[in-house]
Image (cartoon, rainbow, N blue to C red):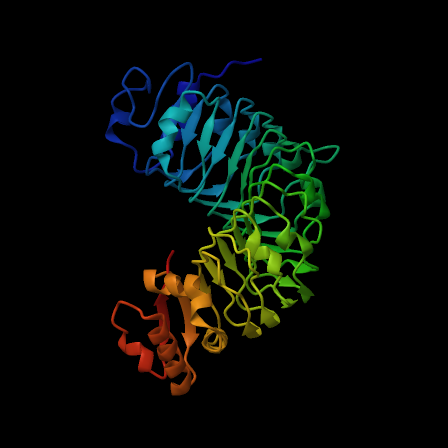
Length: 416
């Protein structure tokens, strides 16, 4: 086997790149002369330079490379198949990150590669599936096209990356279906970011096998069919976004109310209908609910055990006709966004008919100031109802001018 000098490989590639730092021209040895951005330890490392050009197959000769960060550069062309020769690769990224964390990381990484936020085009090389030590694959924010490569008898694929914790393929032009073979119970994925592509077809059932998932982003694609009903096993998911796809109309799936780690749920433009599940708002870690532009209808009932961590419930542009929470005894302090102020006004009208002494908790929230954001008032009468209610709450701060405005957006300060 012929041994390749990594310095010679780097020199070869350097000659085809633009915007090189001046220190790179002082010597032919990137280690002895301390090339800017290159750290040597038994291997070579290149970090976050403003280089331009193509990434040639010669890079496959850097078999002992420990760290190579190319994010923020302007590399273009296709990603070379020869990257699959870098058997020690454990980190592969190509989009902008907060690189202040990387100097410490690089000391322990076998190989760090950043290729995101460049102008790479073409397909994802199947040879990346040979990088068995890879734990971070980041090709986000490029111009990659084609499908996600899956292993066959003759070719590797991304499904072989069983040690990978991060698949960041978002903000490209990838298309086709999301292969069911991509996922298995043997995988250790934490982040799966496929948003901002052109994927079609249904969400594969096998996705539910990856119990380690913490962030799942499939939004802004062209996914169709039924909203998956078998995500109950994703008990570690804290952020889940399926917005802006083409799903068939359906009611909210059961897992809306059963994922204990969920902090953010987003499914805008999701063709959801029926009633918003009451149990959703009592999930122990829930903070953000973004469900605008669906067809939810009837009464919004948030129940009497609303999670105190809840910060935002966005249900704008649905068909909800009433809101029916009982705020007494709660410390609910979220911002509730609805399409029409009528929803909140109807609640206040009901409160007017009760004894205010029983609503002390809710009145205290208003006085101390939380946040409830409401849409536009449709009449002066509704605005007057709001004003009357606030007078009963005896707000200590002066009432703003918009309380008497017919067309305005209401921002009611409420916090526990």
